[in-house]
Each structure stands twice: as C-alpha cells, then as structure tokens.
Length: 288
Image (cartoon, rainbow, N blue to C red; front, top):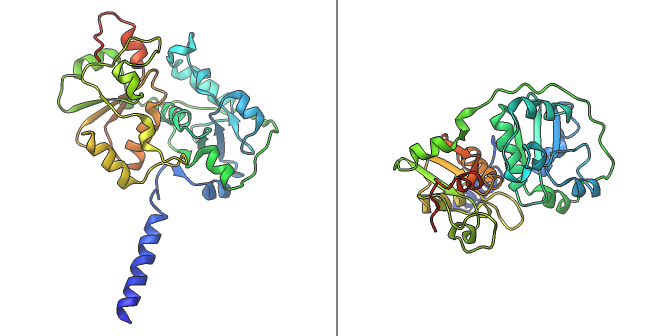
C-alpha cells in the first residue's frame, strides 16, 4: 500500500512540475492572460499585420507590426532611434511600466522581434503568449473586430546596449572561441541554396539553428529540457557569449527569448544590422 501511495505522489509531483515549466518566466499562458487582460496595467499587443488585426484580434489588443519600427527602406530592418520608438509605443498606449503581452499568428518571429526591441528599450515586464493567436483560438477564447480606443502614455526608454552588437564589434569578436555566432535563418539561406536577393551564404564562423527549432508544431515554446538538448547539441552553451542574427534579425528574437528567459542565459546579443547589413559591404566576407 505504501508503494502505491508513493507512486501516486510521485505522479502528482511530476504532473505539477509539468504544468509549471515556465513559472516565473516571461511566457504567459492563455489562462493567465484571461485573468489580467482587463487590468489597467496590462496592454496586449498584436504583432500581426494590420490586415490580420482588422479581421480579428484579442479584445483590447493594440496593433504593432514590426515593419512600422524601421527607418526607410523598412525592408532593411534598421531600427528607428530609441526616442522615436519610445514615442511610437507611447502613442499606442504602451508604457515601459506596464505589463506588455505580445502575440502573433503563430510563427513566434514577430512576437519575438517585439520582445527583443522592448527589452532593448528597457521595458521590464514583457511577456509572450504561449501558442500565440493559434493557441488563443484553440482555447475558444473571445476575439473581436472592434477597434481599440488608445490613450497615449509616456514610454521612457532605458536603452540596454548589453543585448545589441554592431558590425564593428562583430568583426572584433568573431574569431574568439568564447563567442558563438548563430544564424537563425533556414538551412537553405545559410547554405546559399535559396533564391533570395541577398548574397548566397552566411557570416564566416556562424552556425545554423533555424528559429523554428525552439517551437512546437502548435506554436508553443518547447520545454526547457528540449531546448537545452537543442542548444547543447549545437555547442550553444551558457558559458559562451551568444550572438544571434538572421536576414534582418526578426527571426532572432524568439531564439533570444528562449535562451534568455526560458533557459536563463545571461550573455546573449542580437546583431541587429543582421545579414542584410553585413553582406551590403563588399569588404565583408560571405561563405557557403
């Protein structure tokens, strides 16, 4: 009888742990969002395209698509100044003192991009909805087409330069064994076998880990145990400085989130000029 009791207790304990994998992290579940979505200190942000937002969105959500945050031409993905970004977010009712909950259609890359940008601007309480819009709809939670009345607020930026790295800095550190450069693009882009407009290949010394690897098929983030295996297999370990990039560093954001928030890595940077910026200078070598 004692053996049975111990077995049941162990099962319950494991079940409890399994349902609290991300306790204390910036990952928020659908159930948790429902509890706080009407709180005046919570702002929900749809990172989807304006057309998708107009079709349907989570009640109360404001729309911020990453393409509105760049200097022209926006396709290069170069961020506007911290002051311009702060003004933009403030006009959307987003304050750095609020709880900011991000979601996209399910790819994780747009929510991840906004997550990194807001962290770069010094926002402390930024969360990503696990499962994104796909998970919200699957849980049969309410959606709406109604526009949101936005009350402008003040967003005070406190720029965190520790999570950003420039092209000159990349050149200085790329030969160091203590640094690992991670390309979050597809294998085809990394290997130079795709038909894109950029130069074929990748930055010398980079390894390839496509951003999709951190997500499950249902758009939820993988467990800490799964993520550890994935990153360790690539040599992306906590003792190293990790530098992430993709074409414009949009896809790097969700990998940054997985490393820093879920796994607790404390030395992760995003190369925001990204491969677009690197390959635009003929002096910078590109390899296949």
